[in-house]
Length: 359
Image (cartoon, rainbow, N blue to C red; front, side):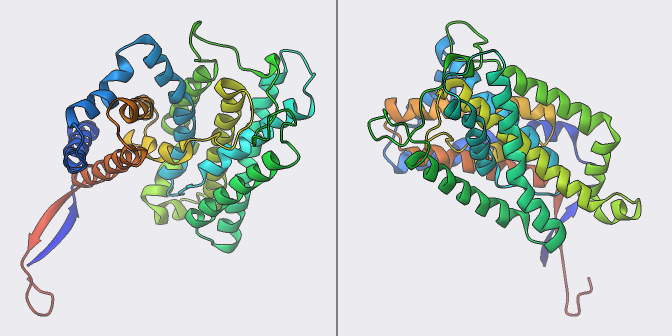
């Protein structure tokens, strides 16, 4: 008897919508066992992770702050994922965006004017896109695997950041800490919600979701991406350029990640630091898939993942949970979601087999 997956003739829309919820329940059950094995109180952990971020305006505002970069990066990555171009290097592109944006306040600390923070965002987006040029070129011209190349480029980006903050960009008045000078007031993105740290970059992220929806759902270019991902041979037969899809996928992903990096240094951080990214580039991969690679779904999944970020911090304090356990929960959630989606699209087939491969 053989066990195989057979694609369903038509996937259930209701089950596709329920897949993230089922994945969350499955992840909670699996992590419940982990927390018990660690000697932690699962009720306290889940309350801190899933409920506390929404229990106060201060906590929810921090969720919105984290949501911005996750949403922005995930929207850019999802476009490439739908075309089967897997950009795993958004973390490095985020860092390069932060570096490019920081060049203005670092080299022109006395500059003033309302043009500074918008210029930083533009420069950061270009920096992220430029960092994606290398894997795009290698994939198109040398057929190099973009997963490996983008991942390795992220490691290089970290070393570039370390060099700058330990060398030419190090704040001479920073008590030997590896960080740049504090940015001037005009280099900071305006606050969106008074009394919180939420800034205008959240609106930019939400606008990116609208653009992604219009491009992927209402444009011929988005249709080409979809066909290229689902049926590469049909796309080639129709004359859709694979090289163009690769270039656009990686450049859009790099542009979005770089923009998010620029918004981070010009927003809540206010300077360039070695800890500028807390894994946004990798977490955004989970966000993109939890949202079903759909622009609207990604808005919801980015809000949920942002709550996990804040809730994970709460759990480390109130429930004495190690940071590794928080990351395990995030990873388990992705695995459970991928399993759920697999059974939405496929069914198990138990077929009897005999010698020679005939039934």
